[in-house]
Image 1 (cartoon, rainbow, N blue to C red):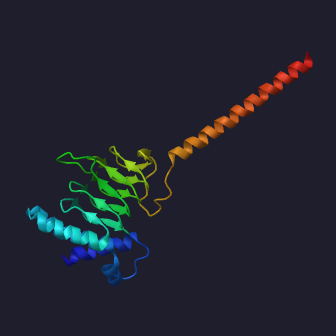
Image 2: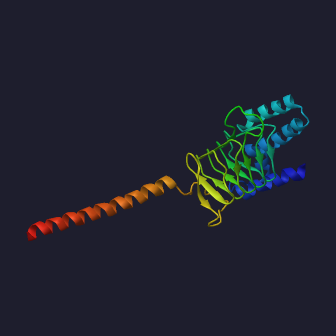
Image 3: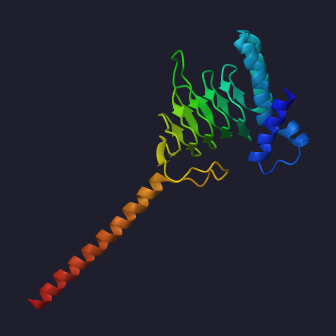
Length: 220
């Protein structure tokens, strides 16, 4: 258990440049406390001690601001940065080396039974305020941009942004898993820029036509 806890703290040092000492990380990182509490709650959940599991989960939520249902399955090297407002649903499956930021929801879309929450594959990153809803899959090495709402599967090696979420990078340049989750493509802005360019070209064409007509009248 101590080895696992040490490994969890090592992930913090890898991901967060603000981390200084193991003592500080151990005492002050809410994301770490939420993950440790979840492991205990999940152990009780697997043994069908659902009430105790939920009590542990709720105490952890009160202390950390992070709500992880005891039924969620979480892999190794999971990192929650800042974490306030994170919600992870009962049938979520999270792979290894996954990073999520504050305000992320991995939620369901209704009252359906069975698998109703997302599956997040290895090495994925879900940025601040993103909502990933339903029994969908976020592929390996993929990024979900801040504030996005994702309702459909995301392929491996992709970047998704917007409401609803749209894939804007897939199997092109390797998607870097770094902390620059604010520097993501904006398909709406790109489209607006394209339209502005087309309008400028059309305006220039109309000006040329008007000039041609004026010259024709002078000749007459």
